[in-house]
Amino acid sequence: MINAAIVGLGWWGKNIADAVQGKSNKLHFVHGVTQELDATREYAKAKGFRLSATLAEALADPAVQAVVLATPHSLHADQVVQVARAGKAVFCEKPLSLVRTDAERAVAACKAAKVPLGVGQNKRFWPSMAELRRVIASGALGRVMHVEGHYSNEHSSKFFAPWRDLPAETPGAGMTGTGIHILDAFANIAGPAEQLTAQFIAHRSGADPRDTVSVLFRFANGISGFLGAVRASPLYFRVHVFGDEGSVEALDETRTIIRLKGGRTEVKDFAKIDSVLAEMDAFADAVAGVAPYPITTDEMVNTIASFEAVIQSIAGGNTVRL
Image (tube, rainbow, N blue to C red; front, top):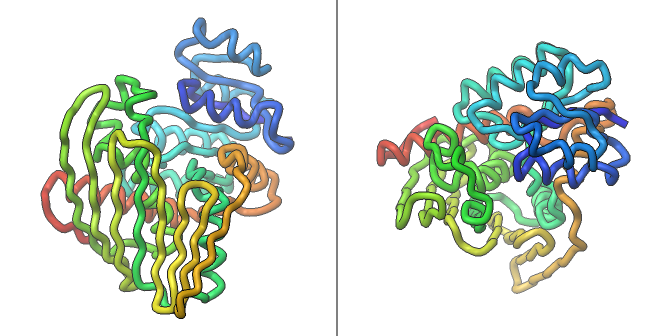
């Protein structure tokens, strides 16, 4: 059992703690960090971990073997470096950073300290996505030529916090909340992007935004792609991969559709899992030396490189070469 600290106990930090505490056989939280100590004491007591106000206090706790960061986006890279230099494994919620150089700095710090780095991309663990990767690896699609992805939800309305409306914390509208998951899928399936062109259209700003992001991609290996994200529309998730022999489509968490030449179509439905618990267990396995974290550091950096390029393209209204 890996003893960990969780830093940040807002909406998502509590989601992580709720998924793990008393449910994981691999990871247990013994320490929590929040700037709202009085408001969080009863929650921490119910979950069975001690509280402090700073990351430094958690790092000084000899019981803490690993740290999970669920903090504002702009803090991620510096905090990953701080944790790594303390010799502790670190899991960082998405996005790992907001610019490529910071992602590279975070990865380098973990490599130098020889500690595992995990990143919060729980959609990787959805059964639909696991089957999509299996089909691609089987070669059934032939040569992969094109990828598409869309992820929209209503979280920006339901779970709004003032810091999430700051351009310095959440650039690119829905990119940090939903689009980043599609970028992670693209980094895994298609590799690094070579160039992209993004479009942003705002219909209403403020605490309950209405806007869209569309991105056209060319990847370094010649694969094409496009991404869509809408704030705030009912939950919809799709990753679709096209080859010259067929296509495979992941729809939401549990459905995968395989279409092959000759009109052969197979729809597969899977049992739902707790994907947050699954990613935290995978991180615990990495800390314990059982298996590497399933998202490589190259994929982590490529995701943020694409993210930064999307923001640049939106700001400049132009095509960005990576």
